[in-house]
Image 1 (cartoon, rainbow, N blue to C red):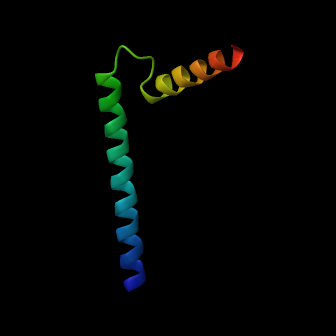
Image 2 (image 1 turned 60 degrees about the horizontal axis):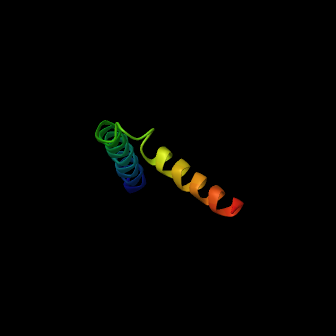
Amino acid sequence: MNILFGIFVWLVLCCSILILASLATRMEENSNEETTEGYIGYIEEIYNRNILDQEK
């Protein structure tokens, strides 16, 4: 019985983490409308900067 309760608690924790992560990405998308896509845009900017530095 304790194993079933532990599995249930684990599932609830995983679901809550996923819900919080999705809310955080939605909030970030709303606050960073000037960037392309939040973290993805930031990663692309850093990648492009590194490529330009390597070409010099």
